[in-house]
Figure 1 (cartoon, helix red, strand yellow):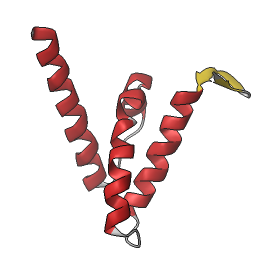
Figure 2 (cartoon, rainbow, N blue to C red):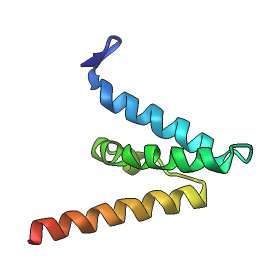
Figure 3 (cartoon, rainbow, N blue to C red):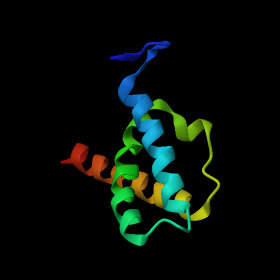
Figure 4 (cartoon, one colour):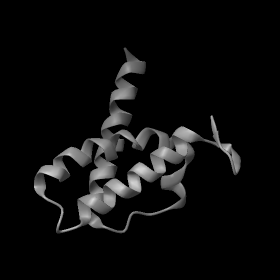
Length: 88
């Protein structure tokens, strides 16, 4: 399924980008309660494979150090798991 105004962008890609941005904003907002941050983090992390496949992280840099570290750590962990699966 595609967005009506952009037939080349799958809906799940657009949703992933929106979910990532909204989740990141919530996680970085000092007024966000810790309980909500704990709920939002997994939602943010589940968008990473889609965003990586789209090449988002080759085009855009995450400037917030903690968020950048979280994303890099998760992508690195996923890469290692994939390499282990391929090697097995």
